[in-house]
Image (cartoon, rainbow, N blue to C red; front, side, top):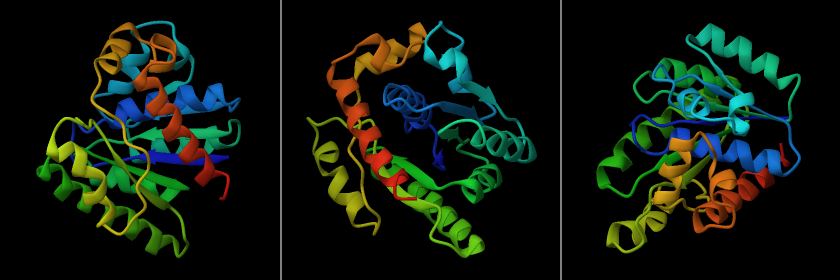
Length: 214
């Protein structure tokens, strides 16, 4: 069992997209999955409600830190993987999620303005690790919404590597991702075999490898 929290102090960096598509990839690996949407905007839940894809039967909402704690602990007893999508502007809720996490994923976009809030989110995860007096949560950075035809996009991974934490496979800015959300499906369901699907598949493999070491 693994609790994986997707966090970031800035909105629009792909947290919900990563959480939802990782859920699909883990299910494809044969894992049982629960995805908990702790963002008051409930973007992940709204995505799930657009259709009848796999997200429609694994996404739950949590509105408060106490509710989040209760739902994560309950889900952890019944599924293999618990994914938590956290809000950008409520550090206390994200922090409470990190206190429960085995692994924290920190997506970061290619803009230099994305790096500053990412550092703040990393500091929050490190604070949670200190409070727990443990090696958990493990922290990994995820290059997100990458445009490879730009200098910023091509240099994002190397910029993140300078932050001192391991960097996972990147996720590009692709139309198929937005189209999948509109239909209520994950990329695996909407565009199997596409470049977007391959990226999420590779990211899930890397995350699974870390989770298996827990």
